[in-house]
Length: 61
Image 1 (cartoon, one colour):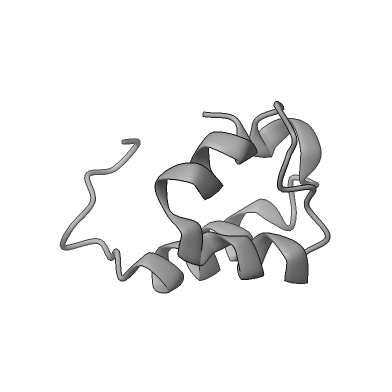
Image 2 (cartoon, rainbow, N blue to C red; image 1 turned 60 degrees about the vertical axis):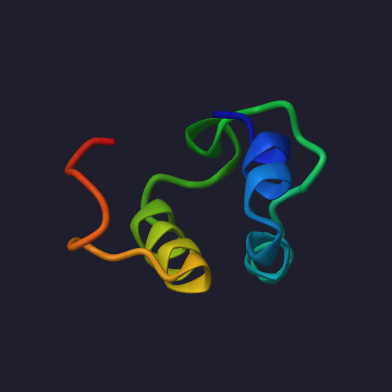
């Protein structure tokens, strides 16, 4: 999912992307614009921002 679509679907992620320097209007996916070593931490922070957890998400989805 492109970053711009994530922000559109979950507006509360905008501040997280800005904090990590990810362009929020990017038509690129996270794996295309975020270094591999930063991605797990960013995903954790995004999930916290939207109130998602292992309880509400399925692995890989």
